Image 1 (cartoon, rainbow, N blue to C red):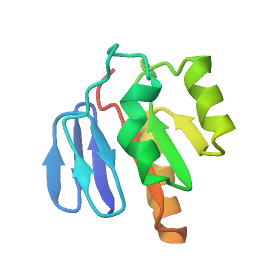
Image 2 (cartoon, rainbow, N blue to C red):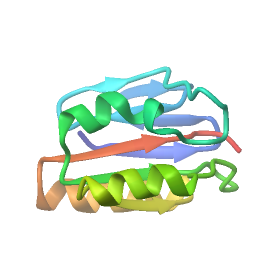
Image 3 (tube, rainbow, N blue to C red):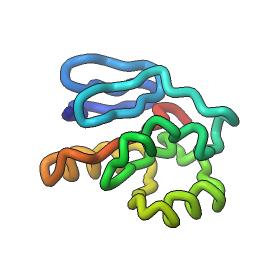
Image 4 (cartoon, helix red, strand yellow):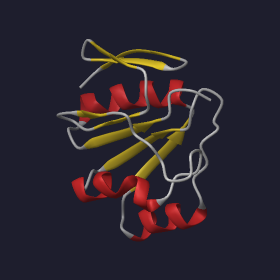
Length: 114
């Protein structure tokens, strides 16, 4: 999977444009990705990602960084030895593409708007 472009509210992945938040697995895209509490990321929002057992989760918090990650979510990931990078979505896109060149077991969870 390669992210070809990102702009507020839109992302192009392997030639397909998505207008809703996405989870990008190495072999597929899940969209729309909804969170239980909108701009707060809970463990339940990451259930399928955690079951996938990635080496790294990249979280894009939106163009303005509106998505927050509670300490309880971060602690769960730490205890389960899941590496995570949290960035505004523009930066998360760049990191995801770089990481995909290095390894196959990376998942990105990206909020496309605010």
